[in-house]
Length: 213
Image (tube, rainbow, N blue to C red; front, side):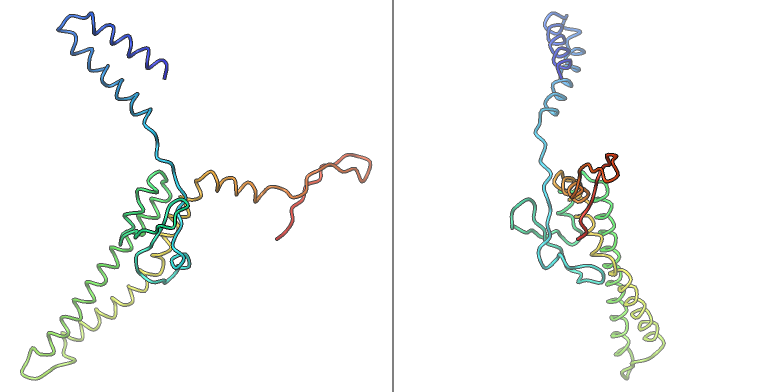
């Protein structure tokens, strides 16, 4: 940082005494240097702990496909994460693993939208065929195809929604695992409960032990 300030001071001195034809060439690196210093001094937004709403914490495999609610820090002001989890994205932008899980969650949501569109289309074709002729029809060839497509859509829905919620929860867990408090908690979990020196045979030995819980 000190070297950067010295370079800026030298450029400013040179700019003051340089001919007019060279001032533009000198002023460009000076402006870039000032911008770099301002960017370096800009305060970084602290990374905060993310918690899910109580009713969303138990959502896992094959859970309800509705928007998650989350809060940051110590507040209880829960906000809607959005259909694709887009409102959570700025909070985990620093963590590649969390972003990867959030991207998978968004992919599953797009697939779910596609599946719903196929199902509604098949239902619409079937309903249209009922009144397409002089008499109501419920099982002509077109309707058979529509029924098959609808059944396939329902089966794909079960596969799509099987792990969709899990991706969002993993994004939150990956983010929280990078916080200093989480690292301290991990150290406390592996810290031995018993640590000392003993000499049962006349030779000093290190005694280390953990209490099983």
